[in-house]
Length: 437
Ligand SMILES: Cc1ncc(COP(=O)(O)O)c(C=O)c1O
Image 1 (cartoon, rainbow, N blue to C red):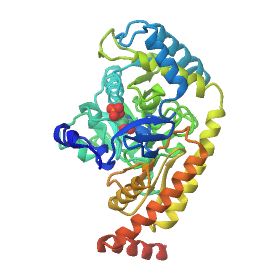
Image 2 (cartoon, rainbow, N blue to C red; image 1 turned 30 degrees about the horizontal axis):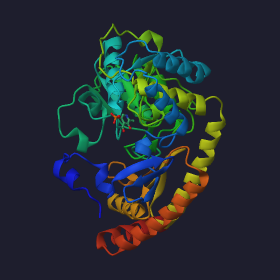
Image 3 (cartoon, rainbow, N blue to C red; image 1 turned 45 degrees about the horizontal axis):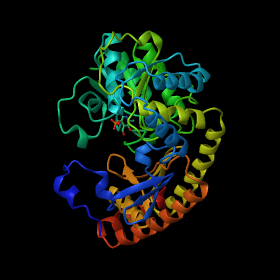
Image 4 (cartoon, protein in one colour; image 1 turned 60 degrees about the horizontal axis):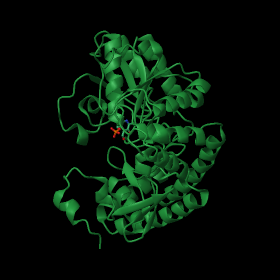
């Protein structure tokens, strides 16, 4: 029996992930998390893509412990430190220079939303315009500026959230509708109601919005139309970056270069709070302290991030490994897909999922999976996507084992839902559609 009394008594009703996992976690290594009873789970959630390199990587642990034990600073505001210099040199050498990126680095407050706020504010300052285009099902954080760009009503809470014009993401109206062309038409029409945009803010793969992957062609069109209309192209790479979609940046193989990029989540390599915003040099028009914050840059994260960059991003070997593991994930999801009529694969590389007919079925699959010692969650507008965000370092055998269990969880979920008439009806209805198409 889990002792969760204090959480129920004292922790705010806003707590969320814990409601899916009836366990008190104590330890973790690699892709395995242990609870206080000694039960071990395979982690397919990875802190929502914040633990791409697994839990407690031994080299990062050693470097961090050595930094602390040697009296290294923990908080330094944005003063110069040896840790920050070392991180910036390594980030430049391993990531920016090989990709011919002249971008400058703004260390924002430590969360993803902080980086998004900085990007929105700077794009508005630089262009002298206020409207920013964001997309259906986009998720950019819960602070008010980032929330305005986020689509989900549950988070938006009917608040007045100005400054954003909403456009349809790639595929929103089905595969045959060119939503980039629609946006172009709206921007070309002086009476469409669209103000001239300061920026276009986009995720290449929408994580929280249901693992919707934009095509390279669509993204290139969006980038070109941003340029034609004098707007800055901001890629929010907070969830899709840091290797999650097969390369360090999610866009680097897609044939365009964003003006601004937001990064956080797995950037520290270790699960520490750390965020930054990259911008082309001409866009760096901040005056000193104009966008301030106490926790800008996190010295401990500088230390672990440098180890991450040296360990995983010196050559292309890690990308090859991600590619191999991505095929294991795709195969596993295809096996699940065959069990669930009307389901389809979503996402790209190691940012993948299975969309099933209802959110109830998706959460039942996750619930059954938890009984089989797996940690995973749903995403999407109705929580209808079973989301797989395994650490990129998960050993192949462990991934295969996770998918064996997931198949079993899917069978169990279907069996338990079949008892309930509404879901049984949906499944039968979808079968009929399958037969027709
Ligand atoms: C694409 C994207 N942007 C921004 C955020 C917000 O990050 P944070 O929760 O650290 O504020 C998230 C969080 O899930 C995200 O997935």
